[in-house]
Length: 393
Image (cartoon, rainbow, N blue to C red; front, side):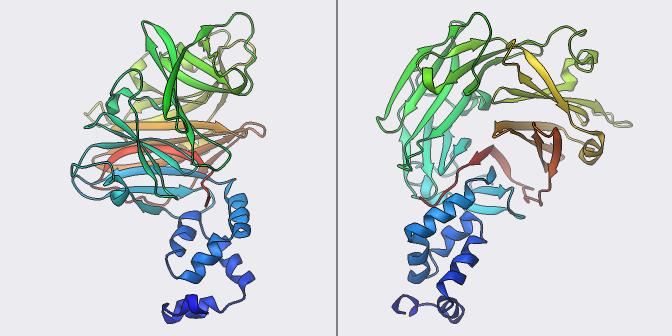
């Protein structure tokens, strides 16, 4: 075939395999690997660009959940590391060349905000701007400033934002976040198709909360009460205010209320759920900042009362595998398709550790997803997020 003429011997032999076998081999690869295979030669680019192949590949990848970690070395490479629950290794995605289209200062402070489908959003601390990157089409765009004006990386809260790609495969998306203005939560929405922002003040609801298919965006988080905005597609212009509370000790598991020291408790929020983690100090360690996880509980917003409702706790056999010291810990949480996913990243003396937990609500089963070493020693963490819907289109 002419497409194979400029290939090496191994690639040439691969090209002469039966087309059905070639496709089956490609289907066994993760999506980032398939995208890279397009660069091997024209023949593989032709196979991968076939509409039937794309349709089948996207159908297979739809069920995969990705964890993306953005790390960088000071004034050096900017790399996204991705891990799928259907793979067994990390994939590296360099964004240096893409970012050069909109970033003009070497070593500029860039932070990964969120991702969904093929779209990734980054915040530039120097330019006070949000940058949208399509990793498949290589399109890069700086989003116009929101009505609140330019915002630095410290202004964004993961549990208070959402990226929603358009299902048509057009590459367009909506980016929504919630912010308090004069103590009132306001929903801001950016539409990439119109390249415009709009804002809507959330309203109080009275009676039972019936928002089954809502997005939940956290506007304010406290130790026993939160302020959450619920947004449903059928009433997108009418976001609702929820104030989920932890009820008194007689109505909820006593574990939460036995925690006298609030500083020993950390919360991770997302999609109407909350992971509560309790830590303890380490014996014979004089540094009180060094701790170890002792218990973890999952809570969710009740559709009946609108309050926080206990869901489950991480079983002891999994907790024993999480017994590593940490000095700093961050995390993110998503709930989708009846599965709650939580990732925790901790650092101890310059070494990073990543934990991925899933909870299947229907079966009540916790799983610790095995993660190989991401090799982050010496790197700066610049964002972490779950994503799904990565596709060739």
